[in-house]
Image (cartoon, rainbow, N blue to C red; front, side, top):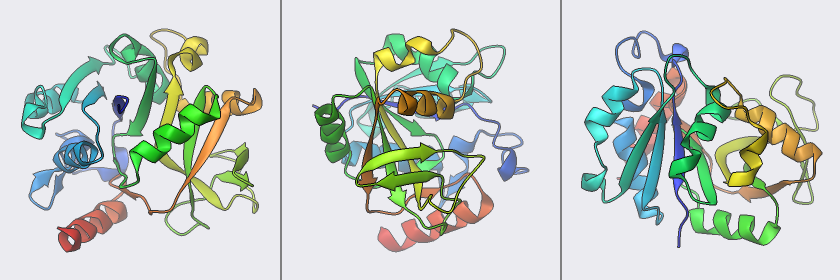
Length: 233
């Protein structure tokens, strides 16, 4: 049975301004529908039946549109950052009471058509606290930030990249609940910091995905996704 997905939808989406001045990134129009409609349908087609939306900036608008998820045939619940943004790691920490012992974490601007069952199986077989999906990017669609050798991550760094980094964080992670024990409550915390900590402790597995990623975090990415969906429907 598929584990639930936490969708990180709390960011300010500054790179999409002025489009996101009055709407959250999840509701940006993609070929006549809010992006999250495409995202939820994709997840359901991959066997996902439960989603927790970790909302922040204008998050109530997402809840108003998606509701309980029934029209997407998927169960949707929500957590809200509150008075300040909790970051990618802090918002998942807040959502833990609604999640299972293991769960996916997906960035709210990512459209990832990989095989989620394969990713889950790889995670469960690894025996580790977390798994990062990676893509052999070679700097093509964004800056490569992962050094992968023989299926093992040797380095992950968003700021200080090196020529040995030919892969990129694909945008889908899997975690055991206990991995978040180190994350403080109600405090802004970056998921990248948790990944790095788990890597140092030997608790981060890797799964190499073959399908390229799509995202709406930038104008260029938004245009690429619109074109991809127009030709794949």
